[in-house]
Image 1 (cartoon, helix red, strand yellow):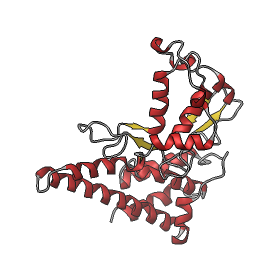
Image 2 (cartoon, rainbow, N blue to C red; image 1 turned 30 degrees about the horizontal axis):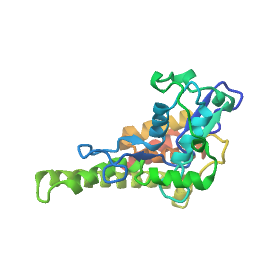
Image 3 (cartoon, rainbow, N blue to C red; image 1 turned 90 degrees about the horizontal axis):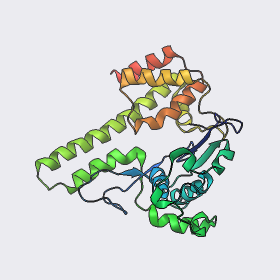
Length: 267
């Protein structure tokens, strides 16, 4: 989102949950550790978000800086040897990260004068991985959070019950919907750029420091046309936003996108 857009001479500092090529991960999901109470059937938070929220809840934000919190959140979110991990990124003017968090979100008076342990800011990689692995073993890709919710409902429903039948129907619909989006995007790209370029359009990632797309109006146009003809992109479907950006960078126009979308989606 910010890569290639926020420069160090801007008076803006931003932090993201992941690199441009990664997904972020849901946390406190049913059936995983740590798990919410049985009454909850959905994931209750995002690993990146709960990391900075829970850190803010227990420290004196008049003393803790944005940079210090970035280190804590990065350590909790990053687990290099596990599938569910992402790299917290900083963009813009990093000098602003030296300021106390209190400057932007205030503080909880109950935490005034609380102190932080040195190991909370440790830069030791092995310590970071060991600490993180205890906290993130139950993370779920945000793209799959809805699927996880529906599977959990189906799995916990009594065999033969109306709830089980309905849960199975919703789960099957979600799987079919995802497959349809995969097929739509594949076919649209193939119609415009050729079958041999489908994988390239979907998987290509620009070098760090370059924005996602050169023409943002083009990207908005592709998303709009797809939504009008094929249906709005779901959380899962939004993973193809990069593919649409690559299509814009390759020179697609409105007429091509409209014709391809009609052919792919209105059979």
